[in-house]
Length: 398
Image 1: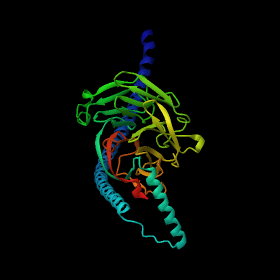
Image 2: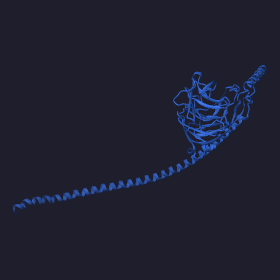
Image 3: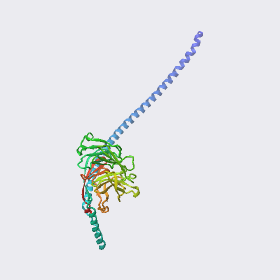
Image 4: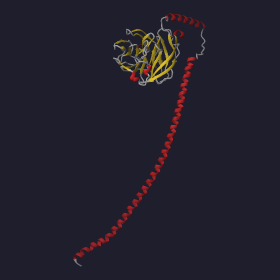
């Protein structure tokens, strides 16, 4: 045996001894991997089973939710129907209450001293005579009951004013959107105002100044309004000539006359006797003040500190020299006239009954009386409404 053979032989023996050991280790590794793969397969199978179970539970839950939603939808419709029925019953009850208030007289009997009653009757009789003498040249019409309401249309937002021209033989309708603006819309008549394309038929009138509040008024060719950004300046604008006149009302403009309509600081009204300004004066306890205006000369003629409070007041208007103040609750309710002040002293405001308005939408931002057709033009949360009323002679109230 040569030298090379002696060197290679040990290596061959070592390799021959190592091969079986490696084979054994590989076999162990393969078995370990197989076990791990089987474990992973078992976990994957378990995961798939769980997913199938979760999917089935989700389907069942989805079915239950759909069923619950259907039931809720049915309950919602039932509740809606019940609410509509309740609303109709409440509306009917309101009408019944109105009827009872207007037809049923008080049955209360109070025992008083006969001499006192006789004295009061005599004083009342003498007072009537004086009133008849004082009223010989005065307007003697007073509001006795709100007869009906007619919703003309819905246009604009919650605050605004609209009215019919109070001039003789004038049918123009005027539309004032918002509580401050300088553009008003003029319509030739009610038909054009209520037409579907009313905006195309309107004539835009640009005032030289913006108005403030909703206490505007239109008489013949003149627009009367409280000038915006001023405390108490009243403007008279001629639509035909663009001419202007102005005046200031002392004490006005600092406090809103209507607590529930704070955007109006001075309200202008027109009746059979002329133009009036309705406002509040903080120096007299905040009660509403009424001033008669000579609209030709634009000067104040006379002023009355009324007994009507501005608290919860909503709007007001003047009929035949008598101020009628409308009240409501801050959260909304039924508008009613709860204070009457007559400048001719023919009406005792403490003895006049509360007058309720028919069902309405929300709250009045303005109410304007037209002495020509004797209707009230009201703005009720974007709805333009006409109220018709019944009247009687002031002396009949005594």
